[in-house]
Amino acid sequence: MSASRLFFLLGASTVRNCNKPANISSPFSPFRFTKPLLSPVVRFRSYNCISATIEPLVSPKNHPWPEWVAFVDRLKSKGYITEKSSSTGEDGDGSIYTDMNLLKDACLNFSRDRSDIFKKLSTQDMQKVVEKGCPNLFRKVVNSAKRLRIHLNLDEGEVCGACNFRGSCDRAYLILKESEGVARTVDIVRVLLVYAFDSAVISGGAMPPGSELIEVSARQLLSELVELSETPIDPDHPTPAPKASPRKKQSVDSRTDGPEDVEMKRRDLTGLEGEMSKRNVEMKQGDWVCSQCTFMNFARNAQCLRCKSKGPSRDAPVVKEMKKGDWNCPQCTFMNFASNTKCLRCQEQRPKRQLNPGEWECPSCDFLNFRSNMACKKCTCERPKDAKTQSKYEQQLWTKPY
Image 1 (cartoon, rainbow, N blue to C red):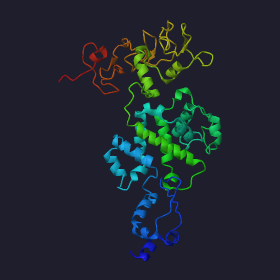
Image 2: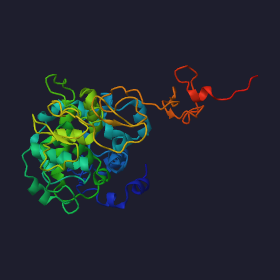
Image 3: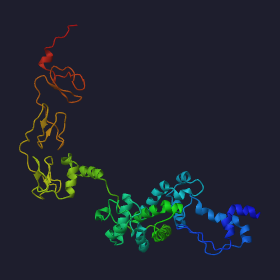
Image 4: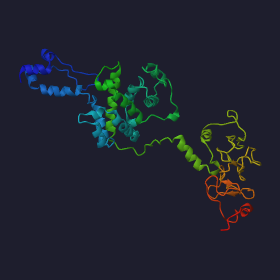
């Protein structure tokens, strides 16, 4: 190949400085040359190898961390990344390693399955990753970083004071409660995920001072995750149980409390978790305080929601404005609407209605009809013809003789 062709490919500066030591480095590149380049004659013969070596540094599709590439490959071998999903995110040039939408769920699922390896990770590297603050302002990432700092016994006030996001973070200087959980593998993986997908890391741009130490520790933790992923899962390690949502908890408790608490609502459940007393809660008419545990119950509760002891006896029903058809339950004195066939509180059957002569109940919808109605006013069902529902008024109706 001619020297002019090589001059065009490598540029004038490369040929002019061929005898000077070349230090091709990037803040996030694993390739670093500290020795002088080869002689010009040898370089003419091997320029293809040099260009092939430099090409991954400038390709936007490849991730500059080999530890991250190895971690993603391990997720693929473990089945966390299926072939179908990897084929949609990978175009054959390594773009899968920079696809956060594809790798986020796979990384988090792996970390949740391997919660047993968290205590085997280097605490020094974890401290370097989180001691300067949080990588971004997303709520889950901030909470994960705070849990890690609690695990490492770091002062949250000092960390937030040195963080670059303290002016715009709504959770700065906030210490998590014990109910918000302890640090697990998913917390450190979530933080590493943010650092690995930093745009400055992928593009090789300039990073703020002190980021080199964080990068070294993050890559070291990724290497440890790859090694520990090959170890068998510890059967004695307790698996963290998922937290039940308040709606699920309400439905489960309502099924186990018995028929007398059918009408229990969300505010009753929240009362079970804290101390409710008549001092700090406004009592309304009908509410009662349990004589056994001093728990304040609502008027509709037939038994105490805390100790399950029976409530006070109700000798007379509460005086309320009742419309035609409404009825009071003989068992618990609860006032039910006319459409209720069973008591909403204790599921007692409705007693027989006191009907005026000629009035009848629809067998289809249980609607109370006047004696002049030949069909139900609610569902247009025909009036029954049995002798029990016939009235003197109906017998006096004139009919055609033929």
